[in-house]
Amino acid sequence: NHSCHPTSLAPGFDLEMAVRDIHPGEQITDDYGSLNIQSAFQCACGVAQCRGTVGPGDFERHFAQWDALVAAAFPVIGSVDQPLWELVQDQEAIARILSGEAPVPSCRVHALGDMPQLR
Picture (spheres, rainbow, N blue to C red):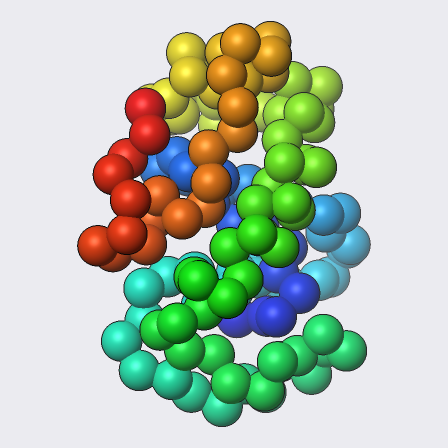
């Protein structure tokens, strides 16, 4: 489901990652503004941070906030059990980021027509 205070985002790779603690019984959510939607919709997520409308221009308006959430959560990847790790195609690139050899890519790599994939 959508939330303006998402539990997960895509960190510039072909996967989603938790960007904050997900409490028992809480839904796993994404910010639909980061999913290349074609038309705006009125948001009813109900969180205090709700922006009211989610739309195609959200990448440009919110990518810095999403990038900050991803960057803060990214280091935890190496310290938390990852039972689906074998399914991750970008393991080497993620390992370079975790070792400090490369920066965390921007969420904007997923914006259609915006930036080339950074791999």
